[in-house]
Length: 444
Image 1 (tube, helix red, strand yellow):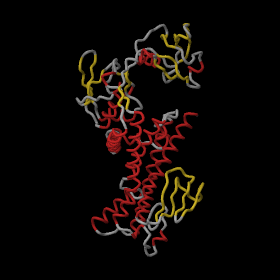
Image 2 (cartoon, rainbow, N blue to C red; image 1 turned 30 degrees about the vertical axis):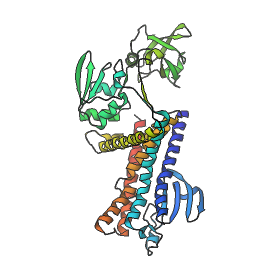
Image 3 (cartoon, rainbow, N blue to C red; image 1 turned 90 degrees about the horizontal axis):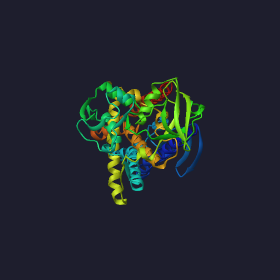
């Protein structure tokens, strides 16, 4: 429960920051072109608001429905659907009275702010923490392959050589590269021989849905970390800090061999051999029906010492271009992910998630490094999604404005009204579908 609350708090704080900045982008350009802004709200406020205060022409407030936020700009057809005001002649301070390029900049202000904020965050993260990564060649014992990886032909102990014959320096970028670039092959070293693993569209569909595919293979030098409540481990005499020696009299060379052994003994009793304060203990425990006993592993120094991580440090001036480059790369990768959603062969649309999925990208413990990285990523998502040419999104308004600039003809208010209603229906459908996917996943 504590982890859920921490994830929720991070999600709410992150989205609140991003929504306020996004709407401030619209607000700033509106004020620059002397356009009246009637409301500036964090969250939506149907029927009532939690807080509001009026300063000058603008009412600032916090709504009760945490699904985003908005600025209400005079003379504009938006989610407020204020049709009566649109029947009156346009006034000089209204959105519809401004030049097309001014209206375009007002609508792009939120997206521009989100992209800029992402670049600033990445710059700050690189300056404060630098980049730590595991070079692929430093995965000394090869890979530990989870079930989705086994299904596509990878094996424990394989050493990744390349993806489509291109070397990937960062171990953690191997599977994202396979998925986002729709790789056709993975080259591995297996028992001293080079092997080509073909990747089909069905394989990509499996990888997209998976939570984990490969990890660096770890020696069997592990102790018990946190014990999960209401699990076989919690019901046994196992304690945090116990060092594993074996199971049922068997010793293992690698940690994944312990995992495989437990999965092969589902709902059976096994005897764990552990060392506690220099004393050997034999602890009986019944493996759950999913092949686990319920603990988080902590690897001993002798297991992690061989994983030689590299750290790149940046001074202030170096961090700026590096932050921009990282932002551009993230945008490119996200566009590739978005493209996969429309590929029926990969069935990426089945992995589309809502608020639960977004919340789960945050760690269960508060970590500012992870928080700012995730916030930058969400800022990019918010910007890209708002650029979609769907009425009710910024991209829909931008599309109509570009049409006006190119043709010299402004779409009629009635058309814009119907388009806004249609866009809102599309968005509501997408939100319902994404969150329904989350609920279905909970039951699986």
